[in-house]
Amino acid sequence: MKFLSDLISGISLGSVYAIIALGYTMVYGIAKMLNFAHGDVIMIGGYVSYCAMFYLGFPVWAAVLLAMLVCTVLGIVIEGLAYKPLRSAPSLAVLITAIGVSYFLQNSALLIWKADTKVYPSIVDGSLKLGQLTIPYVTLLTVAACVVIMIGLSIFTSKSKMGKAMRACSEDKGAAQLMGINVNRTISATFAIGSALAAIAGVLLCSSYYTLNPTTGSMPGIKAFTAAVFGGIGSIPGAFLGGILLGVIESIAKAYVPNLANAVVFAVLIVVLLVKPSGLLGKVVREKV
Image (cartoon, rainbow, N blue to C red; front, side):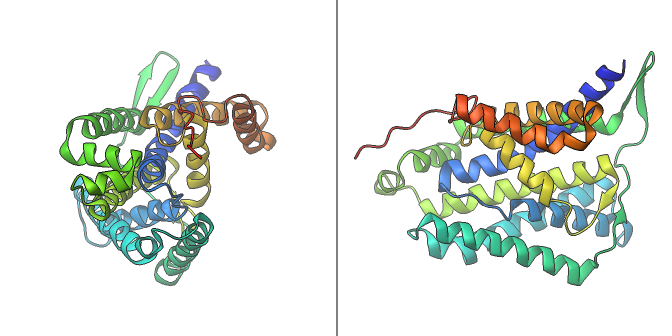
């Protein structure tokens, strides 16, 4: 029974990782850059929803929508001010800029909300009892939200006009521009979607673990990036699979080797990359020289 409980907990945690990883994988798949500030957008989403519920008296659904709106705007602003001028810059310059944006968001949160850890309420009360097994409703909501988002993104990228534009930009930005696609607008839309997902992940993460502080998104963000690489960065199903597997591995490792849980997570990633460098569902891309 304990193993089953740990497994369910891992699937819930992995669902949060998967939602965050979807943001990473979309930005990388289309803009070919690693947005390491993504984890801090999660934290901003958590704070915005917290303030909306506690200080403004918003219901949960309105607080989540406000967090999504704020994070969407924030993602577009970050992309426009920090990343757009570096479109043709070396990847190292973009990486350093992303780290700088991450520190800027963390320190801004420290100035506004201070370093004290806040108690975040569960957005869904109660639990489902199945014999001796108890499953919190927030766990069921987290898993359901992850599945719906993954399916929705898959349909969006394959059926919608903007989704097809994103896929075209992912394949060849120059050719996409020649075909009349607005590459800058497409990349901005990608950041907007990824940041909105970060807000949802922030609310679910804080609601599951009941805490919120300026470093809330740092470690989950790193692990979600690991999940994206694990599953095959650039692949939406890969981000989903990588997130779920990583969450399950971490949960079981915490139950049996708690002091080595993080080490086990990253060791598994190293093994996967040694055996299959493109990730579980990633594609090997051969570059013409």
